[in-house]
Image (cartoon, rainbow, N blue to C red; front, side):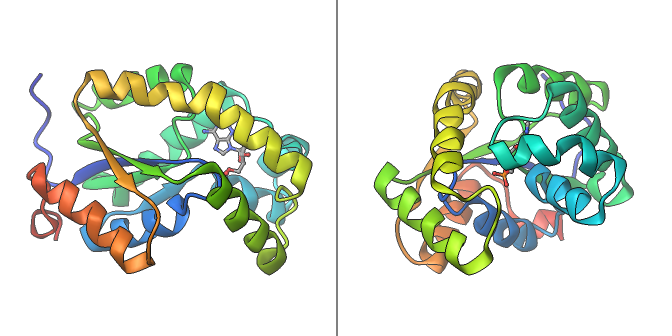
Length: 204
Ligand code: AMP
């Protein structure tokens, strides 16, 4: 498949809650000069602002359930249509199930684009639970309670992990060990992307 005239880099970062994907996503997006698009952040900001969207998703997020594919995909299409995402982007938290993968494929194909790489951050279950508990104390996120965390991890394993199988068949998944210092992990990701020929200078 020939992609459009794309200078930028189109990335997705995937990992269970507590894998550090939000933090690493921001670092990688900065390194490549592309916006980090986190659906969780968009929803949390909408809840905080009390907007229509926020009112629609508040209870769902607090239970750790998934917002509907239609609503989430509409939010992402809207965000990726902003000028700053024309030259590439890093998605964090979307797609989160196979149906969302199909929504995204259709949208990107319509623009003559596709994902260049999917970063899979691997962290043992015990470590991710420990990190979420720490974040719960530090940030007081309403969806970081024990029961909600268990629900979110179960949804990750049931619905989100299978998307990696889809992307693996396309040969675009880089599995990265998510245990180590922040800098070490960032360097591992950048090295894997550079090994694919995705260079930071091309995005500058
Ligand atoms: P996150 O910060 O990525 O863990 O997202 C926080 C919450 O936002 C999730 O637990 C879901 O309720 C909702 N959410 C984020 N991304 C999606 C998505 N792609 N599909 C459905 N719900 C989502």
